[in-house]
Image 1: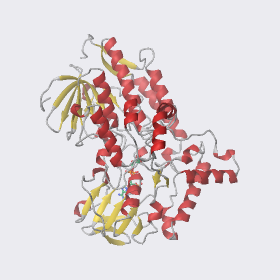
Image 2 (image 1 turned 60 degrees about the horizontal axis):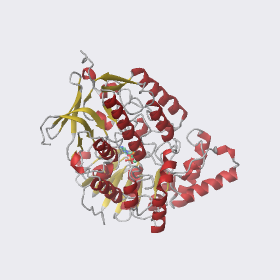
Image 3 (image 1 turned 135 degrees about the vertical axis):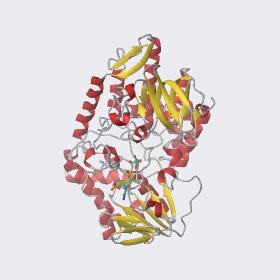
Image 4 (image 1 turned 90 degrees about the vertical axis):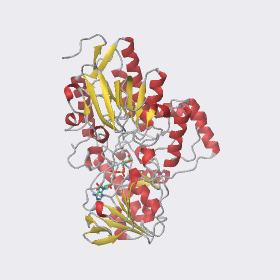
Length: 542
Ligand code: NA7
């Protein structure tokens, strides 16, 4: 296709992360014509952008990999239990090469507008390259964490040293040896950066506002024998993952915290700490529901922080208080707390000494100025909705998605939106995105879409759209479930707290992956009763 040309496609796919890549593969298999648009220079999504030192997935690669291709499962060998960014990106590249996905995408191109044309029943998608694409369907594989957010601190543009954003990391080696480096942000990203850059930097200053809980990852290399065992057993591992709450093979349990006496609980917590990974969530069933159980586990982890960190004042400042453990994304680290025992690593407690401004020379807090040669921003994302509110998405009668979502993300199954016909979201904001294995969600959503498209073809249907009542019912289900969890009791990107002016509240489906998959399956039965269809030959709406 030449840039600028306009001809009717079956679909436009936005994004070439793991969702968009899989969508491209399946749509091609169905014989549909489509074009993919990707802002990054290549495939990989977040793994293309997040090249910061220490970037790693906190899901094990037995989960964080495609399950649809037995060939790729056998051909690709992971080197570690939890893979690092370079290996995940290499995997994305391998898949793209193996399945010849790259020719479908226009890289380095950003969508600037997507508009539904009521009369022609097509999406008109415009890009910053000046292309206009017309397609029957628009598939948004835009990711829940793709719009990075700078901190709202005055003077950011004045800093004279080297400024790095975790989510837009340069493609060349960055040398911090001997340098005075600052990191703002102590979420999953900041924690991974700190433990890595601490090994190298002359002085490392960690600007911490809200401390996170982090647990030992206990990552292991995969020896060839175990890698072979995994390959032999993929079918069973995948089946277990797809039947689980998290869309992965992590342990789960029905045992509530107070079903055991104190000594036994303590022992299980010690075991979970030793086991590492997300073992805690598989040890007790009610940690996200029972505040008293939650607090006891939080206190256990605070105790561990106190044991690891030698300086009592630093240890105290690193201990999270005032929100439930696991209500923020639980981080997994390799040596985060240990880093603070190094003489070159300094914690700056921004709850005690808030940041006033960024200066030419560094960061000024209420305690004074810290001079820096380099500053790293690990300040998070406009999560879940950011990518689809970053440009105008216009549905019927010119109605904009960002207006519809003023009060928070609102959709049917996180898949589609009333008033926006033939728009399909992969890993949308009202599904289990961010709370379950995103690769499982991607596969589930894309497969579901393909079944729907086949159904439409068989029945001469031109458009789909959720019934407004069905959408309302889904959001009611989401709300009812979320009221029962402690997840909304922390100020996080899950609830929109990190973006000024954003609607607050938990719009994610917290019922777990397996239940979500069941909802999707049921929704597809008996001719999709929750969807409204227009026939190919129906009169165009006035
Ligand atoms: P997060 O988890 O949103 O963390 C962002 C961090 O940046 C968090 O510690 C914030 O503190 C901090 N932040 C943001 N703005 C400021 C200002 N102005 N001053 C000081 N500190 C600030 O993003 P991540 O990238 O770490 O992780 C996102 C997801 O990626 C993660 O959940 C995993 O799913 C993978 P705050 O909490 O607002 O006090």
